[in-house]
Amino acid sequence: MNFEFSDEQNLLRDQARGYLTDNCPPAVVRRVLEGDELYAEDLWKGIAEMGWTATVIPEEYGGLGLSYLELVVIAEELGRACAPVPFGSSVYLATEAILAAGSDAQKEEWLPKLAAGEAIGAFAYSEGGGQASAASLSTTVSGGKISGSKAVVADAEISQLMIVAAKADSGDGCSLYLVPVGDGVSCNHVNTLDPATNHADVTFDGAAAELLGAEGQGWGLLEKLLDRAAVLYAWEQLGGAESCLEMAKEYAMGRYAFGRPIASYQAIKHKLADMYVKNTLARSNAYYGAWALNTDSDDLALAAATARVGSTQAYYYASKENIQTHGGMGYTWEFDCQFYYRRSKVLAVAIGSESVWQDKLITASDQVAA
Image (cartoon, rainbow, N blue to C red):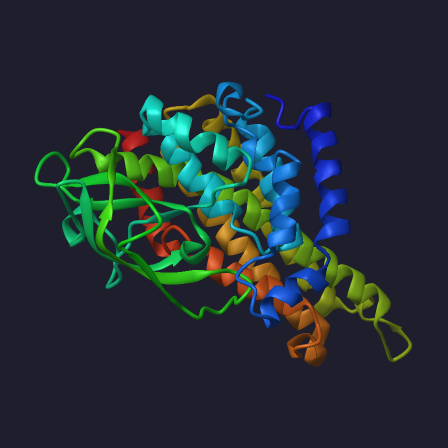
């Protein structure tokens, strides 16, 4: 089995890396981190012009109609650059939800806007207070109007539409709804460890809501969407982990102590080697996830959980050891190590914590074994 990307996909990688090197240097991340911007709007516009937001959207809806293998390549490069844009919320989640369950009218209305980057989507399902489940939902919809609240929704303040999980009386106890952001939707900004990302608590007070998919079948759909997003987030996390390893290696080879590069000392060698091993294992798992996602395999739940856990662990470890390799200076505000540590912590809980995905991995493994 060939686990390598094609020549065309590697060319896409080179183009994406070149574009982000020029347009998303650390100065852009720092600008959003330290400033009042909710995201790098200029970078987002450029990403949309490059067609990345349209990658897997069918051509009939203004997309490029490419595969998920192209999308994971882009996700990895965005993670490598620590890009302060709402790509995950809009592309991995909102777009995927409409592709999977939207009516023809919903697809015709929203997919061209999402493809062009004119609309940003958000995905709101957790209400706080522990692991989300269909039974824990208190948000309700009556007569096409939604009421309730969602906690710490990524990119809520900058979105034009939200995909929202709400309580249902039938089926699995949950339905998904498409909610255009407008009257009846209010956001309260939430400060997180990574100010280069946007999060807010959202309150719905009689906002218009359209059913997305079958009524009462929302939680099953939501679980499938999270599995798909987990693979894409895993590649983004992997990109960040690889960037941390490169930063640590470059610093260690250029930093001298007692007349020799610190990279020549065994303690630093061990740090870099351990980072490499964890990243390589995460990449192997991410390949498995990419294959399962692209082929819509029955193994997707297992592959997604495997990729998600592996990349979460690798990114956190690499971001932490990158700071350690830089020594005392690595902890200072002036150094860029913090960007990746912050992002690793936020992405680790973006669609459920590591422990949630470990439970999913055990469950999926048991089902395969059975």
